[in-house]
Image 1 (tube, one colour):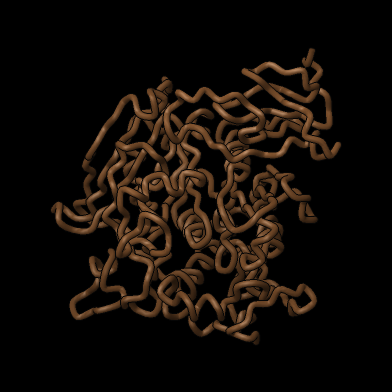
Image 2 (cartoon, rainbow, N blue to C red; image 1 turned 180 degrees about the vertical axis):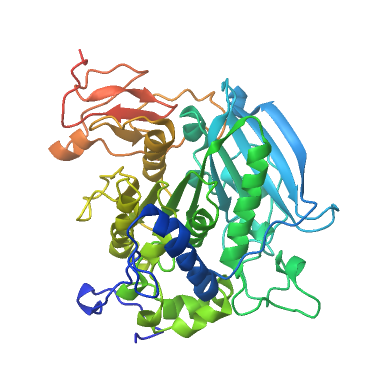
Length: 485
């Protein structure tokens, strides 16, 4: 048993624990073949997570339809195609719906892979693009541009640092997103708003103890967005990655576990009930999360508050449910609340399932150094900084997707330095450039600011390897670039 109301930040106080074996059935039968996994153990584990944590999700409703509400073939200064699509869950137009924003590279000659996520503040918040409709969804308060829990024009582009659209499109991917508040507003009202009432039986007023909470509703919405992406001829249906940050990182993992159509899954700082092992009782615990956010989970989950050892699973088995598809787990060193070590160990202990299925797992037995990503089939990095999504995170996600969705090996010892000492064309479309600057590693090593890396794609720096996107420099420090003059 753990103290329900106090987080633990001391590794010495992590209790002794024994993790459930993902390759052992509930009746003690070992899982020895891929057929055993897919036919017996995986369904058993999925049912446990449904019944005891996230709740059972219903199928899509009959009569769901798509309405394209806007289209711009030359968005972001001609760099992108922008579409806005309203996903209607019921035959009429008055019921709940999901408003999906989709950017595609304008230069694409064939269907492209896409990153799909939910966002917190409305689609207009991800970019300064004036063509994005202002969301009418309920969103969390406390940030500029949000009035009475609804976005205003002043919120446009407020979270653009988490959605580097130009970077993603410049690498040949599309980016799709929708506001999670379209599906279920993120507060506990007894499940009277959002999409839950669409599925109530006569006389039912809230989900049954083993039925979906908010995370289940958000994951259900990601699958409905996937339904649309499968219908869009500009999207490669076999290469859609689902990703999310924090509570939406938990959502991405659950969506990936439930919907095998997602080719790749990314968890950013997902922490407790995401990638982090619950039995470590480090940072946010089951007791804390169940008390603060009971609406995220099914009612059955409450009995594990302060009693993590009684859980019939742990989060490594959530990751294992995605096998053999690639999964990337990202941590931040200052985000102790999310338990970076527990997130790493979630990947480590999911690896035996991947290996049973004939692929590699997380090919690191110890946590890597800061900002040194591991791009095995279960990928991982821990970066400097706090609970957030940064340019470094996105560079890793794109490299990981390049490897596992495009078959490209990451270049050896090539760093991508955001906004590093570049002359930027100020006529570039708003939102296409990030001004966040990564320090030059040569400068840091020599404790100087004398070196200038690049001016219009030329340099005397021996570590300079070129410019990527509009605002990112390629650096091979400490190995000199053999092509440098």
